[in-house]
Length: 228
Image 1 (tube, helix red, strand yellow):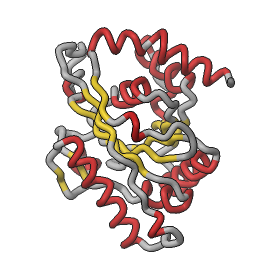
Image 2: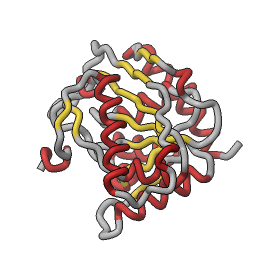
Image 3: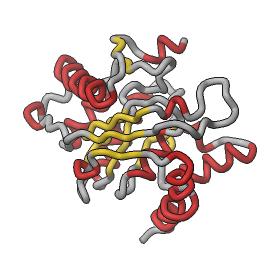
Image 4: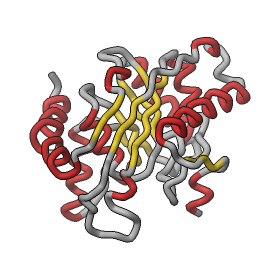
């Protein structure tokens, strides 16, 4: 077992997991839909920064996220704790500022999947600005086709209410939930990863399933534009 895996187990089972269970009592449905081994994509809606803490703690198997590089450069007690969690849990920093950022991120994702990882992604690309579900970016579809892996849809529920925008202290009286759907098989599209219409169709199917699982209102535009 690598040092990263040891630290991940420490965070999950001793340092953070029990505290989350006691404080928030998060409920989880559909754990049986997460494969015990082998590569797969986890596609989750994104309501809060805490999604990247609640979800890995809830799933027995280690999830590797391609996290924003900024999460690894935090300052102060909170920033350093977040950086330590992501680094210790084996998360992979991704620079979103370069001209080839999207292409580089897809290449990194495919590499991780080819190595057998359970890779977590937020198809919306950023946190929802208002609790609604926004249009997904097609990078997830390209990764699924290039790596030839299933996509497991996950709906995070009420995590945006744990620490709403503008609030410094978390709310503890929140019914936090995680609903995991059955794996989506896109093998019928293998070899068509350069067809933008296929990529959009796959991405829309993933987002529709997230909408069904989480009950969010869907907005057919990108969250980043709404935030801007």
